Length: 296
Image (cartoon, rainbow, N blue to C red; front, side):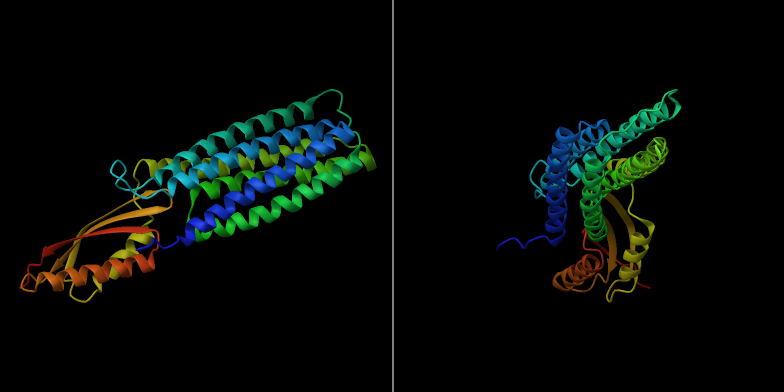
């Protein structure tokens, strides 16, 4: 039987391809702007886009690897690759935030302000950068919400963090050209660095918890328990255990059935219950153990 295509995988791959395409386009645009203007602010933005491209390529590789089916050496699949990639991205984002904050503070405290040049071409390139990045962030947000993919969420955070510096660059170039002000860029950059750090800690914490086999969200556990509790033919349940790996939720549960019914009937109850849980939580991988209920 042919394997059914995974819609969540298709969405995650589309987000990965979109991030690579956007990063590649921005690198080319900023290379042109740098050659035309010689602006250091454009050069810094070019370096950031180059790092974005490398991160997006790594994220894409993690998505593809995590989608590989289970094998003899990885009975539960490869979805933990998502958490490893997300943790690495969180560390990278934290380092980037620290570098941005340090550079912005140094520029803000410098005794002589650094003059900006060739503001017109720089503004044009940064406006295009903001438009492309905003479109990508919106699409990645939709994919992350529908799939729960931590790699896409971490990649989205990285590009979201690029929006404020890009907008800040536009404002600073405009302020420099119009009023001779050069401190706006540093102030916005420090705020963006703070936002990046908070988001990176959140993404990193979630990835670390998953690598440590943390249980699923309590709302998911409660929802599964409610389905099992009300299922026809199930007289009780115990040992409901869950763990997360990437965007997957692994569920183990023991249900209590009438010991006088046939094996075929018991199997039918378990199979139908498993299908109901997966229908409610598509990312769940469910194993159901059947025990004899103590009927009084």
